[in-house]
Image (cartoon, rainbow, N blue to C red):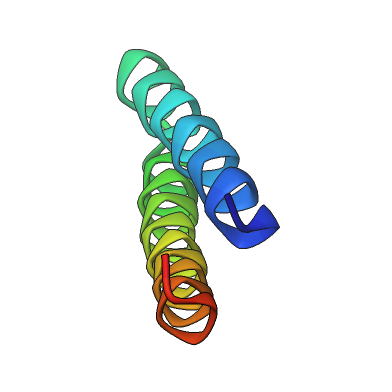
Length: 61
């Protein structure tokens, strides 16, 4: 598994926590940061998935 997939999943989790905390406290800027972190994590995870797929194709797995 590519490190980007792992890091991306971590960013998504961190973003979800931030977004939830922002909702609870009424801090809209924290909510926005959380959504941005989640989006960044999804992109990074997708990049990692593409790298994994490319490795599979290259190695014939």
